[in-house]
Image (tube, rainbow, N blue to C red; front, side, top):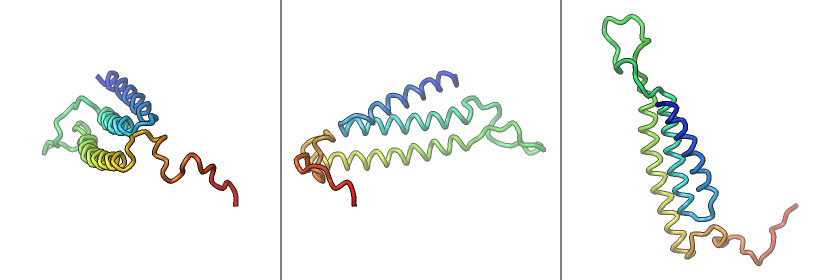
Length: 124
């Protein structure tokens, strides 16, 4: 099971990087979503998929060796909430940029540096 999830994480990282290198904002946003999902699955896989023991410590136990680790689940839950809010912010930002500029192509979004103005000064 962990091998399959590791391959899935690799595929998600590959696809997300491909989408992040696109010129269109919507594809970049989908790349951010896939990247956050890949990181969540990576954290979850690194923290063991199959728990050997229940996530509590028996009262008569002297050592704490065979208990489930709740930290990866807590990290993934927190990361899901943060990535969803980050995606919502980026979606609103992309929508406003599309409304103002009329395009979602990053090559056409050259308001600060128009193509016909030439290069900025390269030295002091």
